[in-house]
Length: 168
Image 1 (cartoon, helix red, strand yellow):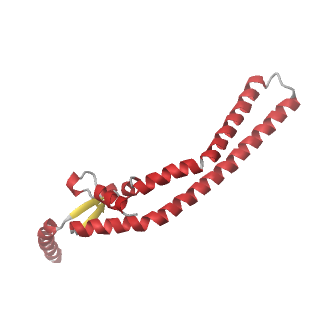
Image 2 (image 1 turned 135 degrees about the vertical axis):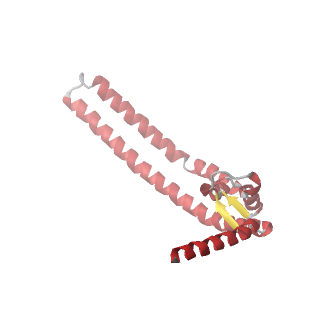
Image 3 (image 1 turned 180 degrees about the vertical axis):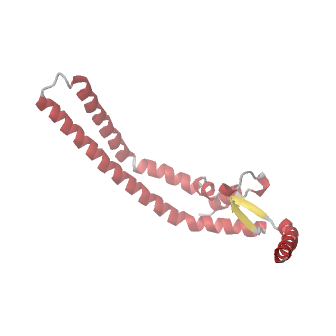
């Protein structure tokens, strides 16, 4: 009997909440897209590409040299003396090690630069989101990743990007 009463109460509460939910103004926001599509993020991407271009080129050169050594060992390995083969293997291992070290350094430098950019841009993005939410008088915002399909009029991502771009 208590189960039936509990189910009846829950049913009444659920039905009572539908009119309230129908009155809610809901928006969808792709937070990551808002961040990455902003003018500041695009400038950052261009600047970091230039900043790390020399390091990236050094990595490409090391990779090319290592591949060349490996191909030579495979191609000429049977023709080379043991000493020459050991010398090539040593040189290959040194190039591979140097590649790993430089690659790790580049990744760490890029990650640090990314963190700095996020620390700078996140407060502005949050401010832009707040302004759009207040202007639209939204009751709830749902992350775009949690939504299967949404009508364009409920997606506020473009508005947030425009507001973020207007901040300097």
